[in-house]
Amino acid sequence: MSETADKTFYLETFGCQMNAHDSEKVVGTLVQQGYRQVPTVEEAGLVLYNTCSIRDKAEQKVFNRLSDYKKYKAQGKTFGVLGCVAQQEGEKIFERAPYVSLVCGSASYNKLPQMLVQLEGGAQRVTGLDDRLTDECFETEFTARTNPHRGYITIIEGCDKFCAYCVVPYTRGKERSRSSASVLGEARQLVDLGYTEIQLLGQNVNSFRDPEGKKTFAELLGTLAEIAGIRRVRFTTSHPRDFGRDIVDVIDAMPVLCNHVHLPVQSGSTRVLDAMQRLYTREEYLDRIGWIKGARRDISITSDLIVGFPGETEREFEETLSLMDVVGYDSVFTFKYSARPNTPALGMEDAIPDAEKARRLAVVNERQKAIGTARNQRHVGQVLEVMVEAKNAARGQWVGRTSQIKVMNFTVPAGVELAAGSYVQVRVTGSFPNSLAGELAS
Figure: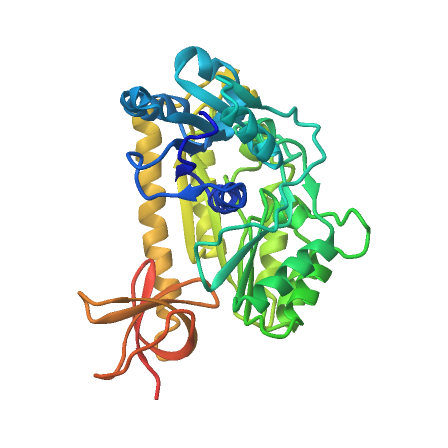
């Protein structure tokens, strides 16, 4: 990439909300360095691929995509791989895809300006690969936010939990929190820009430890809720080990805090949880569910579940089903176990056949469909506040989300137009396993 090359770039992102928000910060950094984002690979001088390594065969998908890009090399384009697969595979990416010039893990994004200078100077291979002991967070004033109404703020990066199935501690480094002062400062900037909803992000967001020792996670939530102009505060994802009763207490006390908790359990069996190295038992998890259900507010509960972890017996799988019945989740993200590089579970015996994992996944999904249907039915007849997101012209409906993060499809009287990002009152008229239906309340 020469200094005279057109400084245009194309960025493709895969993975979680943290990856998406990382890309917002990467885009802002590139724009600040004089680059211009373009909508297609064909228009770009620099092509970046922000990767995720959580799912099975993630690396192969990356190399397949890079193979698709190879045909553009003759046009003088420069290619870079960012994110978790970049950190995981490192310089092996250069060996398998020699036309790639940049490999940068998420913990090295703050070094992007220097790396860009190297590329512009003609460097053929530039790397940013930190070990997991890095203390740095990726903070930038140049975030290019893609959602004009919901602002994402990363408050903690990395993970120290080392679950047996998870690659994140190896790709994103150790847990490192931002100061509460910097988080609150960014939130106030978002309000000044017109944002009304803030969502805090972290691999384990409630493991936040203020390096200045000024605020606990619950205290940070309470202070955010007091900032004038903020209508809603969300947070994801919580780890049960660090989930305290004080979080429920502050949600109960502050209506600005959304009445929703995403608390991944992964399995209903204490034996499997121990094998997964999840750091809590079934009973300890249910204690936390009891705190949430004991709140005065109706707090929705969502979760993650993995089926087919090595050695999971049919009886242990049924413990997961019984846990679902006991908790009554509003929704669940479900996964078949897949072995990930460098993780302790990689060498475990008693692998579950894929066909059996698929059967268990289907059973879990069917059970949750019934639970979700029943849970959503309780809202019929209620009037709920909805943040408007978009209009579905084809169906003659508007789409938004409630404070409990439930999707609401609703109708409005003829001739009425709503603004995305506005808040309206909607009467619930129908329910489905994963959404609600309603009409604008007069």
